[in-house]
Image 1: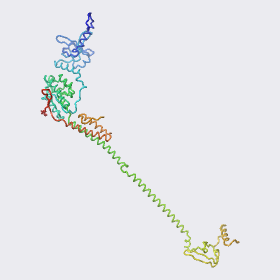
Image 2 (image 1 turned 90 degrees about the horizontal axis):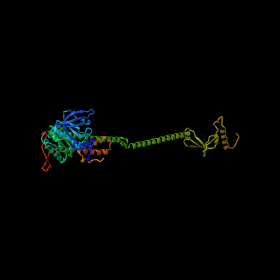
Image 3 (image 1 turned 180 degrees about the vertical axis):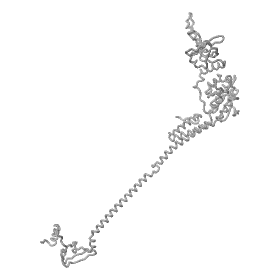
Image 4 (image 1 turned 135 degrees about the horizontal axis):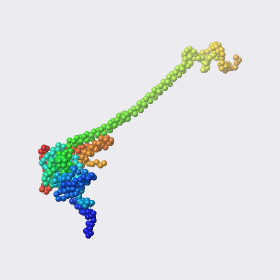
Amino acid sequence: MARREGPISVSELTRYVKGLVDGDAVLRRIWVRGEVSNFKRHYSGHLYFSLKDAQSSLRCVMFRSHADRLQFEPESGMSVLAGGSVSVYERDGVYQLYAEELQPDGLGALNLAYLQLKARLEEEGLFDPARKRPIPRLPRKVGVVTAMTGAAIRDIVNVTRRRFPNVHLVIAPVLVQGTEAPPQIARALDALTQVDGVDVIICGRGGGSLEDLWAFNDERVARAIHRCSVPVISAVGHETDFTIADFVADLRAPTPSAAAELAVPDRREEQLRLTAAQARLVGSLRRGHEIKASRLRALLRSPALERPLDGVRQRRQRVDDLSRAMVSAMTHRLQLQRARRDQAASQLQALSPLAVLARGYSVTRLAGTSRVVRSAGDAPAGTRLDVTLQEGELRCRVLEAGTQGRPRPQQVSLADIGLALSEREEDRGPQED
Amino acid sequence: MARKKTESMTYEQALERLEQVVRDLERGDLPLDASLELFQEGVELTRLCSQLLDEAERKIEKLTLDENGRPRLETVDLEEGA
């Protein structure tokens, strides 16, 4: 505010002071120790109280959003650590602490330092879950930052060896308590990242009092874990309390033994998994092969492939059948023809004049002609005749004219008469009957 | 999908790929040559996994810093139950 001659208003002054207070880095994030007095929980859920010590008093407010997260019930007369920011409440013109955290003050300065460092690192993003790296399933080498003597290293060796007998450990021995511990732990972490093949680091110690574990609440340790190029498993031997190292580490194990379990796989399990995968691999290939093979077999069993000549055989047989049928049809026909010929021949035989001759008849012809003599009248005496017998011929002469011995039919047809007439005329010329 | 060269894989990459290969093969709808190729890859992966499991050396080393702050490794005897 520019320097002014005249008086300024109350609110102007208040805003000026508020600006000064709000702009102060220390007041923006501060922990205060004191005794609670005039504690009131407003029905809105906000807490109003004062912190006081022998000389002074500080007005405090804790809004409901923070008050709801308190792990204990504050009350007047209680010694507490209150964390928050200081600002000015303009209406009353008073400065007050806007508390965000409240811790019972039984743990002294260490606890305050812990809370302050935790708040600072958290704000910096060192605990960000997004930057936690996964622990490799099979580290080539496991780095260990702990004391060379004591239960922690023994547990880590035993558990890793039990799970993975050929484990390769690289131990960076450090002091795990005392003022020298934090820088040693930090240097060991840095050094381990330079060892080729170290894929994961276990950093911790066995159980102890809060003070014993304090090296793992040191900022140097926290920052060394944070900048470590490989994942870090924290293993500070305490089931319940979290150290700063636990928050920064990629994975928190409650004990060194647990950390060892997380760092290396169980070799037998891995082997079983591999064996199982191998069996499934072979099995599935075999099954796939079997399916294809059985399809092939089915195809091979198909008539077309199994008896490829079948069609030809079928056709060949058909040809044979046809040819047989043809031959038999021909034979049959020939037999029929032969039978007909034989029948005709025998009919012919029956009709042969020779057969008549065989019965004793003879044929009489006018000699030298083919004219058959049928009537005695046709052969007057002296007529020369040729008589044909069954065997041989007789040359004869008619001695005496015969009568027409053959009786005339009682009734004759006109045709017969005609014929007779014409024969007579022919032989003898016209004459009266 | 570009197949990562088997040799450069980490154990978990190899194991994950192996399990994928097995699943693919078990689906059984692959043509014969593809399944043979997958099988071949699976065999290589199992071999690699076994090799990685065997590769580690049973050894405990101690890392100390020399006076110049350079790391120095020495083998120590820290057997079970020690």
